[in-house]
Length: 311
Image (cartoon, rainbow, N blue to C red; front, side, top):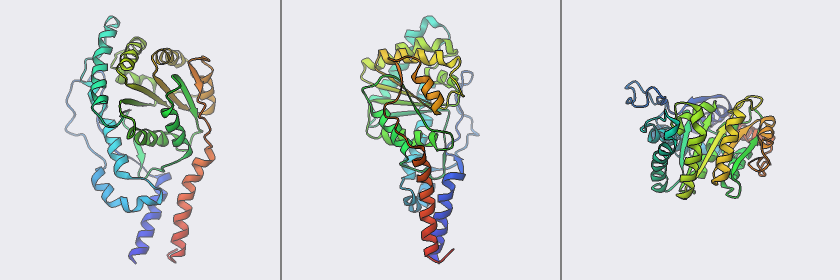
């Protein structure tokens, strides 16, 4: 009976891969107006990693992932923005260099004292209860992050509904363990979220701060990788100009911007500038493989469940 109950729970958890999404952490998002205020006492943690991992870890082998590592890494990445938010936001373009120097000092100190890469998520992430690990797109993201030969902007693509955003997060968390003195920033939803990382009040300040920051980090031997996930709609539009500014600075100082989008937008990014932007040469992701990984996890659990006579 106990074995049958375990099978039922394993099947239920597997199905949650595709259907159930929960917010790992709900912490107040730092904005330009409240960046100096202490966190609200009403802040809630939806799930406690240690407690949840204790109960779910026996079933994680269904898809091969360590929940404790994923959840703790996500918590850390969500909280790392606080390192930056303590600094005063830039309000005068004339102070861009001094602002970048102060920001770089904070980042370099954190990166150089850590045994793994520093991850920052903007805004806070939400993940499946049990994320599917090891998809083709996740491997693609890892390969792009590991490629130190390309600077500037690299774009990669997978179509909507293939678990692209989850794969990006898992790739960052896994890659970080083996790459100290690196900073990877995941920006989702809107390019305006970059204001929180560069700590500026207006987007027009961003290129000047980025160029100074990229140079300082490069001189300090720290690699910065900005991952822009689903930032653009069906076309680049006006945001393409800002992306090109980031591309110039990143290419000049050996830093990286990775854009994950649909094929159409990824190819548009690649054609912005032949030297500084490109569709990543590692783009060999088979979208069907990503879908099949999820389906295999469900099918294998269902098969064992039927063989046990509980169906």
